[in-house]
Image 1 (cartoon, protein in one colour):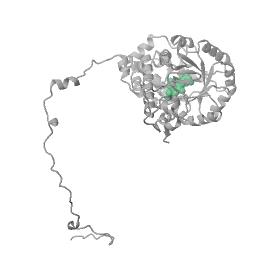
Image 2: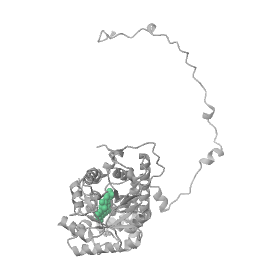
Image 3: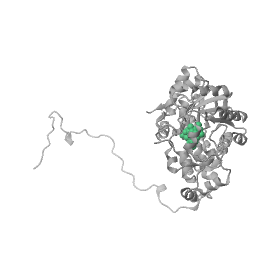
Image 4: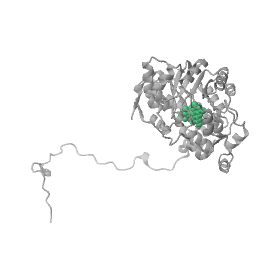
Length: 444
Ligand SMILES: Cc1cc2nc3c(=O)[nH]c(=O)nc-3n(C[C@H](O)[C@H](O)[C@H](O)COP(=O)(O)O)c2cc1C
């Protein structure tokens, strides 16, 4: 049985018969070319064809050659992971609780779209800027990090000397594993800042402040997001102690990372910028040092005591940014401590436009700095476009340090500089001051 398909709608015109179609009157198509063009015919290669292609290089195994193979900060992180025992690597790489804050902070930089300007002459991109009244060759500085010589034995010396060579500020942490005086001597022409954790014991704080001033530090950065230690669960799981204890696990780990252990055991034992030697867990040390009773009155005391530039680090709301400036701060660092304190904390990149707007409204020229989550030069450019005056990097430089000591920190700075220069040129911008919020569209 055959089915005749009737149109559902009788008004639809049925397809015309071939005889009804219009007659094609153009010229007839040319016949297809057959045969293979001479250039596509196979032949035996001649030596003169091969010679220019043969560029075998002697394999290079130097530290510099290895570091050069890193094109991104993530590549340096991979190298760092291979070369550093698990406990110090995780201490650096990890964050608090579910590590949600750190992940969100990094994602925030990715959830944007750049809006480039075309046909601008970008033959001379200049990355220099001013921060707190002095020039910096790049719009970033090195953030304060504790226990740095535990990550790689060159620690603070590598960080401060790389910063000096790059013409950018370096911040020594109260928990740093080199003294204020030793860092000043290692990088005498560098712009060294000191980061302070305030104690209830004013005399101890005062002694540190005086040492920092005497050693030529022009900026004091007081960190205020650490009333108590964050819950850094990787450290708990790894049984991380200062200095790393020799257990069966760490000795086994040492067999895979002999260079780290060799360096660690053959250099000066860890001493601190401000503490005498300490043995115990990081959380215990932090909790014994930090003062949960601090208030804005302590900030007022600090403002009266410190004559140089005063910056408050760990600002997480617009109201607090305004308040610390009203109490005399010369600048703020929008930061959640790299996600290492309160998890699910505000993301500095999201906080930035609100702080910029508030400072503009208040006619305040306090510097807005930002850290947390920066893993590329494009992240820095996005922050500057949205109103930051300056940025700080923590892990980005520590990955370089663990990947190759001083040369590794140099590599971090080279990668970020190249990223920034390229991003600026592709945005059609020559100077940091030309960046505006119009260059960035937030996608979420
Ligand atoms: C290993 C490590 C140690 C840190 N130690 C300190 C410290 O002693 N004082 C401080 O104010 N911030 C400290 N921070 C926070 C950094 O100064 C900075 O806020 C954070 O690293 C920025 O995030 P990022 O690592 O994603 O760049 C530390 C961060 C890391 C990763």
